[in-house]
Length: 244
Image 1: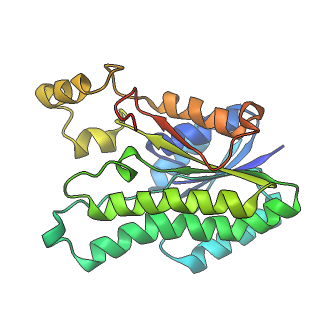
Image 2: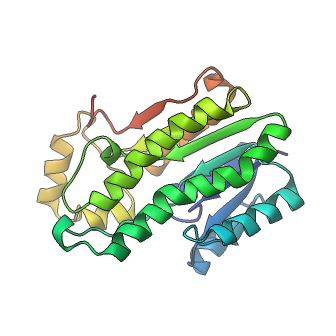
């Protein structure tokens, strides 16, 4: 049974990615920071194929310890999904150093340390696939998100560098969700307001928000044989909202 590791794998899009990999027959290790209830619910939904482990991605020592445990108990993962992310939105002129550092540490340094910890074992085992979950705001800025946008833009460049250096053993690609119908997106953009939702939908050619399943479909493509000749790429899944 193949092993997959999904950071931020117990809530929102990450939970859907964990469940999809489990449905493909993978043993999934879903990393989470602190919500034990969401972790237990995800394990139950995984019907024995999902194990959850706590890990603070701002702490490289925790990442090293968790990855050592994973490889010791389950061997090298076939798939690593760098999904964990945090938003601490604030206008640039009032953004604190802590808000900047926390977002960059989680969204950019976290994927670096996770990939660095697991890639050697993946190469030795014959290869695998890394998928970095970025965002369309990595290529199109927004107000009050200098830290988040910069972290995701950096992740796209890290994606390319890893694809170059880990080839031909490990394929590395980025998945960029657009507006997705998750609690976090609805709250952040106040999409529970019908007028705000209508404004967003009018800007999306697909005329709907993305779903967790849309993102899981894209992940499935990126980690299975249908994408075996694809690496270093950015797959935008946003209903046509951004075309660049």
